[in-house]
Length: 143
Image (cartoon, rainbow, N blue to C red; front, side):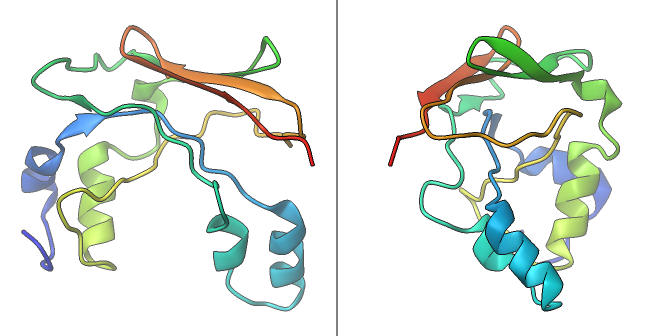
């Protein structure tokens, strides 16, 4: 339903697939924006701010409610939670977003951040995944 408000009942049918991604934040830019009471856009939308894994179509894999979302940095587990502990369901998030934005085929919706958010540094290696579905792996370049 491009451009229209989507109800919770139909929102789930709009999901093509699942992936895992890192929704990064430049805390230095975020602090400046907060101090000046400005939007955080530049802190969230910078170059290479959202690495994403391959997209797995729903017809190839359905996620169980207790699937684990996790992040490791330099071999240490930093974050993990099961999908059933998320505050809002996928359908609820899509319905809410459709009231604010024109959602279109191909849009990516990032959701679900387990406890344990922490800074990443140049040279850090990360692995993020959803158990039995997909893994995203990479490193942050040194200056």
